Image 1 (cartoon, rainbow, N blue to C red):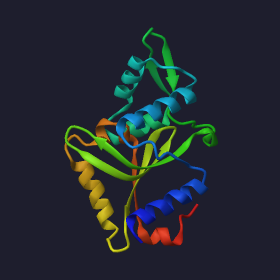
Image 2 (image 1 turned 60 degrees about the horizontal axis):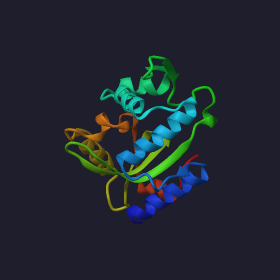
Image 3 (image 1 turned 45 degrees about the vertical axis):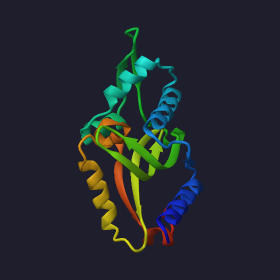
Length: 182
């Protein structure tokens, strides 16, 4: 099996599990646009461009523990007019009301990195899981090594973009043959 065949099989299985496949989200700007749409819908609010930019500045954190806390909490944000906005990134009370998406081949270009991510799972537009795929002839350890290389790059997307919320998962080819456990 080629890496592309594994990727297609994984996406097909995720679609069966009711993930919405978003082939249109291929770069940072489209990822952020999608996140904004989902954020505004979840929180029943319309942000100005300036508010959205400030929101991104506030929620993007290089510290994985800070990002995880933000993801799981009710947070507060000051709107341009000074009014507070209490918001969440995920619906903690009723998980089935969250919007689950899968994207692939996302390119994130930051100061010093130009990485392409195989498959990413989104909840309400927030990237939460990275799945690095490798074909049968490649040791699954190589997937984890590649993720570590990406994270080690100065200026990487993990600490300067919405990717700060991601948890990492290695999906070796042998799993694709047996199917994805639900």
